[in-house]
Image 1 (cartoon, rainbow, N blue to C red):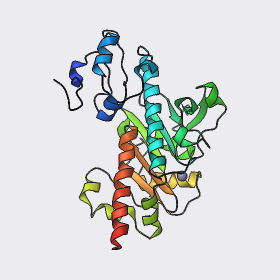
Image 2: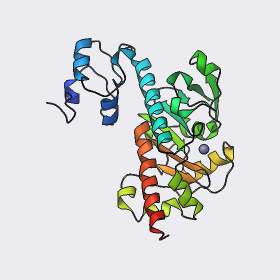
Image 3: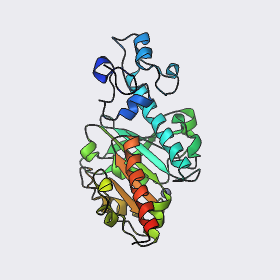
Image 4: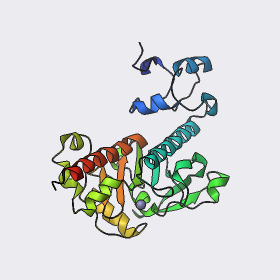
Length: 283
Ligand SMILES: [Zn+2]
């Protein structure tokens, strides 16, 4: 049995620890995360024949965790390149973080790097430290690569850290936080529109994406920006959030989901509806 892309069905790829088929994008675009203990390289190549992906030789098949990290960071690079092509960011704007539930660290994009040429080796690896006898958390940089050690984490790390230290509804999977500056979302907020209010009028938006009330004027890269986003997303002490995306007036949006492309889609949907609303001049 084959799916639409001529690939064997996921369940036939026994032995491949795909990302639970949660998002077919991963399967289609990447060699994915797997151990091939019981699988030959030829079988893998057959399974992936015709898949538009980076050359399979680029992946060290057997190292599961390394593959997961590499795959996810490459996916984020693709997301940021796409965001750049859509004018959702200029070269050095935007930032992303990703955390796997069974690890006490997360990865974040570095500060001041061109996002259209972002590479996995440039990411910063951030350790999450829980204080003894307290519910407080702190972060520290960890070794990742030689290139990464020359760079600093994104200035929006207060925002990412606050959303990554506890994973809430993503505690059994992955959490990705994407921050970009999409034109029509920002234009709509500039025109006085609360993004949460337009969500109710467009079922194709609110079916899939829950939009929080706007954050007002706050300085970029500040703790205040982070705190206001947490408040509007209704972040609780376990890391649960009530909304998928929040707009920051005069600045951009922050979207959260269990993989990079799903977070991206929240932004895409909201941007599309904002464009329609602004075109209608009925707001
Ligand atoms: Zn920004």
